[in-house]
Length: 505
Image (tube, rainbow, N blue to C red; front, side):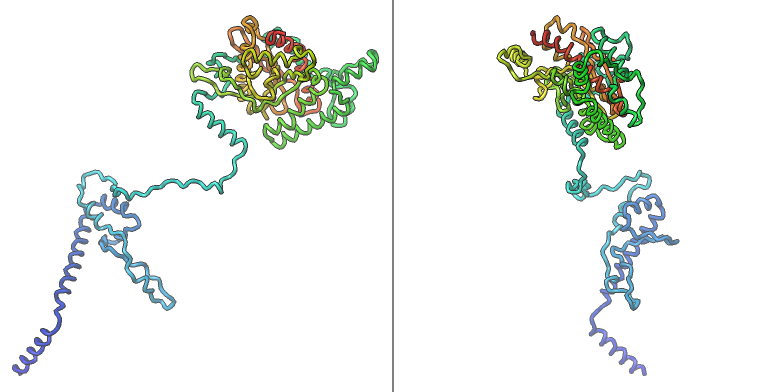
């Protein structure tokens, strides 16, 4: 039996010697697994002793870290591969793709590097390798999907570009900023003592119009009853047609209605009133107010008689101050921004020359500009107003919200206006330039202000007297009467002074 057993053992040894040796591969694999477990165990021990660095490790690894297990062992997986969650098929078995290992970001090296740091040292964020920092530049907007800008926004952006180009210009937002300019503008309250002597007669008539005394023709009194407005006796114009004859009465009617007659004039007044209500209710813009209300009432008031007397209005919304020397200069910030107003009541000289062309006002203006080497008789070189002397400036806004801005625009434009007159007149005449009425319009409200320049260059802006409100039919009659009285001042007082002191006629 012993011999048989030894024979069997030797045959087994002989068979084993003929097989390939797999012990080396198994030992190597077992050694690698042991080393990996040893490293993981060492890492777990060091992580357990440094909880602060463990939290930092979680912040660094983010979602890629699958190492922390909320168990008592708190083991950190150091494997460089993880399995995707098994997605069962219809028969309940996981798919082959779910069993494939997917390479993920290894955190073992990060953990070891972090644990080797001094535990007492303040942790600092890891620096990313150069050249791998992602850039998060904002993608430029696609112009195809951009909302179109309104004309107001486009205008605002154009003004901002102009202000960036000329850094010497400083924005003027309040009338008080003119206190630091070379021609200061003072705002004064309306009072009888503040009215200059050369405008007392005008102001007296404007106060009567503001109280609506004698502005309603008797021929249309019955029309007010139809629209539900009450007309008092003091509001009706006195008429003595029986005493002065039909011819005189006809001339008075033509002058009062611009040759339209009372009935047709009433029709235009009613239309302006309706346009005012539409602008108020619809919240329309300033250009809409200008085109539908303000331009209409200026034309209605001046057409006919005053148009024949060469007094008219011009839309100067786009007329800029052409000469920079006329723009106010702020001693602290430099030149102020150029401002514009909306309308001007001008002397509109006829260009139909007769044989004696030297007697024409237009020819005298051209000669004056040739001698001085200037391109315009005003502060702007816009073609439609450069040969028409400005008598009264009109600034409009759609409401009282823009009152401060309107006063600033008037201050800048009036300063340039008086500066231009000083350039055109002699030394003696510029020491006493005439005062000028100014119209400020805030939506439906029309206001009178007075500009008065002192010999030292200081300008007083006296404000303000309420003239009328186009929100009512009576108010439309008030405003038309006020505009006509302004036209009378331009023709009877301003034009003679201009011809004498500026043109030397």
